[in-house]
Length: 282
Ligand SMILES: NC(=O)c1ccc[n+]([C@@H]2O[C@H](COP(=O)([O-])OP(=O)(O)OC[C@H]3O[C@@H](n4cnc5c(N)ncnc54)[C@H](OP(=O)(O)O)[C@@H]3O)[C@@H](O)[C@H]2O)c1
Image (cartoon, rainbow, N blue to C red; front, side):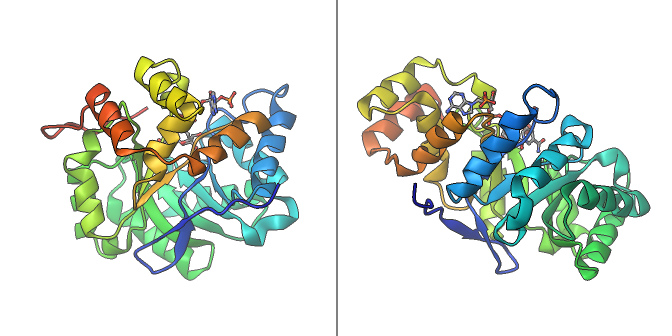
């Protein structure tokens, strides 16, 4: 199969990042599934899916080792995102956590390094660590995850906080709260949103409306949920697929053009927010 054409988005630094990639949460938790997980990510790379999202938390570090096994000698083609846990986000511990991730990932740099969610260490310390890691070339960009609007405003006030590359949040058809305020705030500043759990960890698959729209296109509900995200500018989507078949199906969502009728049907079943809502998190 020819390499897919995956659109890119521009980060505030001017660098480009793919808008579609693969997640790795729940990978590395079962020795029995390990080979399939490596094969799924490698299959994705063979198809041109060069963005991989992982975290020190996933599989207690094992997901990062799986990423290393999948990437192998293709490191230069791949955009790796990893995350530091809030309990490790003091200045010193962030740097130590990053060094451990680099070892597990068998690489000398992480393309985008995120604070997984806000913890008790001051944001200024985490940012100092991110800046030191960038200076050393160990991370190329930094960002945050699970930050609501108030937290984004807090980080923007910290010295260097205006260089935040992304906010990775729960966003899918069933979780549209961010459209009210967080998303417009990020858009205004050119900060792309990374939409995690794009198919709500599988819970969207049996939804009647998704099935109905999928049927119109001879597609699947997963593809409709993904296409609804991939059509949006400034949104990066990272489904997790543990098998080659799911990788193929998810990637094909990029080819699915939802019509205005489809979008209206989806809006009726999953109405956009009418007022501010606290950010959901999984
Ligand atoms: N920053 C954060 O706090 C945070 C939180 C959650 C997730 N994330 C990131 O976002 C990624 C994606 O989110 P997620 O893993 O929570 O949920 P998700 O991508 O919405 O759903 C993953 C589930 O959907 C299944 N699936 C994938 N493609 C499918 C298809 N075509 N047909 C049927 N089932 C399909 C997968 O099964 P198989 O495994 O069998 O393919 C898996 O059980 C994570 O892996 C992680 O990298 C970040």
